[in-house]
Image (tube, rainbow, N blue to C red):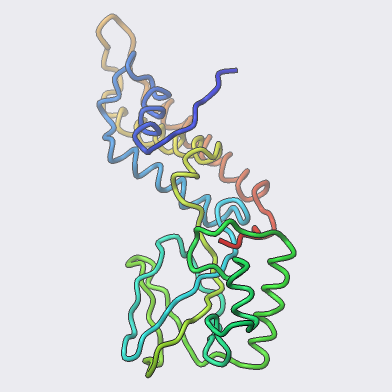
Length: 245
């Protein structure tokens, strides 16, 4: 069995798909690189949305908010905001507070760069968030504008705070490029797209003989896509990942 190397960027992914489609023996001039990129992104989005624990993970995100400001830029990896806690009573920056100790241990990270924790860290964090919700119900409503990678915080803050967001985070696309399901699904989408384009040339004889069979390629891509989607919905369902960074 051939070993597929790890992709270091999207260009290597594009080249891999082009080779699987027959290039350079049969040039794939009838599908643009932009079309292939669309196929790759669609495969990543499907996997992120439906493969819990593999394409997306539960995490925390600290959001400093400022007086008289409602709109804030956030990481593009945030898919949903599931809960909000406010550090104004004790606070991340109050020495020896629960938040401060959790923050220092990397259990409530400032971004996605901490080393992370395991199941126990996750359980402790979740228990703390539940206690915080019970005792100190947050007054903040945080709305994610996913297409703009921004959030809106209401009511408008009257002083500086730090909000702790419990989020669902999508795994970065570069990591998903090396997920076998994503590779196969992107290829199936590209086959379906290319096959549809080649039906225009149905019956045209190639130099040296042979014909482009667009219908067969389209059907193969469509069948592979349906099988992979069934696999995604039945095999890749897992409890959320315990990711602390």
